[in-house]
Length: 338
Image 1 (cartoon, rainbow, N blue to C red):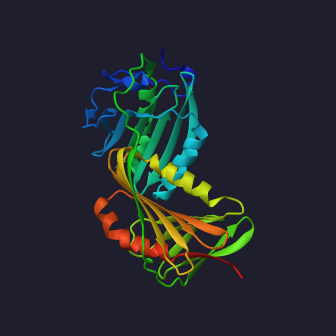
Image 2 (cartoon, one colour; image 1 turned 90 degrees about the vertical axis):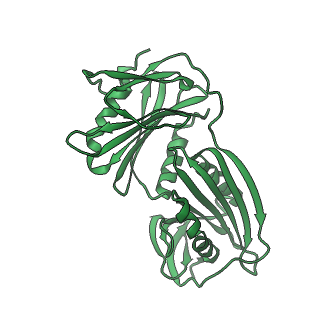
Image 3 (cartoon, rainbow, N blue to C red; image 1 turned 30 degrees about the horizontal axis):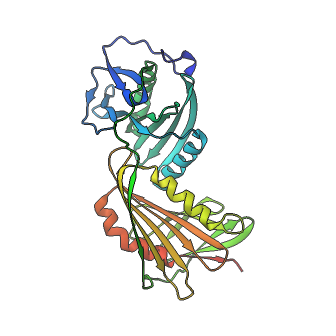
């Protein structure tokens, strides 16, 4: 079946030779220009190609592949992806959904530093979903974005050949209960937080700078950390602690594929038995690079609590920053504003 014209992709005339790409587990084929040079690819990528940019020495990149995922909640997926990208320091510029072959094709366009990326997931009723990633330096991205239109206009359905092995994350989990309090430093920095109409103060160590993301959330720049820490604040009167700790780390897990090392640490940090419950993950991102994350539930004796997230793609940096991160988390507090 040909890709439907109603998809809202303008069908571009193709005058250059094309290469057929099969994504058998997703039951789809597409075509890309033969002049696009191919990159090495991993097992669940159908193809990884360098996209030439006219009158420029830099090139873009297009990855086409699949993930094994039977979910159907496109709105939930978009919300989770936006949350994860924001936590990793990206700016989400646009999210949209298009109907293709009777199924929704969802897209997210984001920017981080000088790189712009479009991520797409085709939500067909199959075990394997086609995924794509188009990226380039931001100043030339407008030149390659139309290439995505051309490629997707060639999409056709074929017989589905299910993947021989799963590529969803498989976690190897270790649980550690710390016996001694963690390191704590003073928290002279104050940032106002509003939770369900009540005023609180997020107390942070010296040198931290908090930027408001919402009434009850902040992005915190921490001395000694190369990436910001995202902190969301809650009250158990509205959102049960168990619900947050179930949903937030589960959303982060979707960033990974393949085997993931997970270490859970429960740390009592104060004499009044306040606790920090850490979920460390080490593995491979959906894009194929190293990925390390840490989600932390910061529980207090009063009803309010916090959830913090940190994302890093440099293994060496992540290891070097681990102590600074845990000291920061062990020290922060959320107090009711008097």
